[in-house]
Image 1 (cartoon, rainbow, N blue to C red):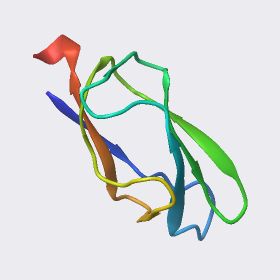
Image 2: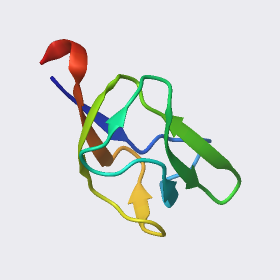
Image 3: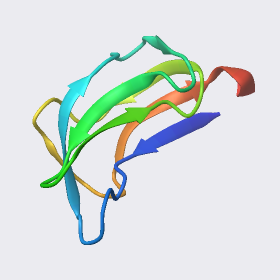
Image 4: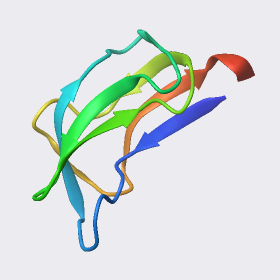
Length: 82
């Protein structure tokens, strides 16, 4: 099963986030709860953890790109549901 990692709303009125750094790349294995990406808004920097263990199939935005809240940033193939 493919799990989509979406840009979260980190505060009221926040409509976009900026990618600071990916800790993993496409085709890398990531463990559940491992930090996947760092993002920032006008008010806060935040680390996004992987919700599942699996292989990163796709990263859709690169460092310094602005992402709208709710947009898919990456896709991971959940190793439990192959």
